[in-house]
Image (tube, rainbow, N blue to C red; front, side, top):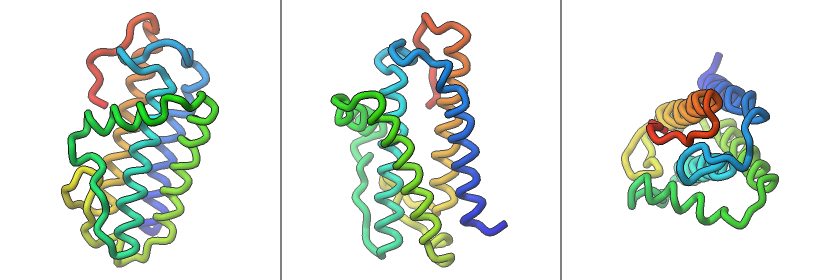
Length: 162
């Protein structure tokens, strides 16, 4: 299997795990103290957007913006607050569309660009493989959180690693 296929499969695997449990989640219940399912999906889509911007700049030979340069917590709050007016269905469509855009950029990426270092959304350098693994793992952490939360959905999670 070539690297592009492996990266896309890794993203698909992480996403499939998350999407498999979404129907079991009460959309209005707080999963984390200030986040319902909608805010969690906004957060994931926001990070996909940041990775898309970094990969697009890398593909075009440009220096990307670093949207998380003010810190990950600041960026998380910003991605959720800028999507606050969206309804759940719109959020879910963005959550799906941003992942498809990310996979399309990987498909377009020449092999040599896959191996070259790029600037990641938080400003450090890494490879395409590294950033994809970080975000696939991040999504799997949220999936694990949801599974844990589903055991006691009346209690928001306060000890998440995601």
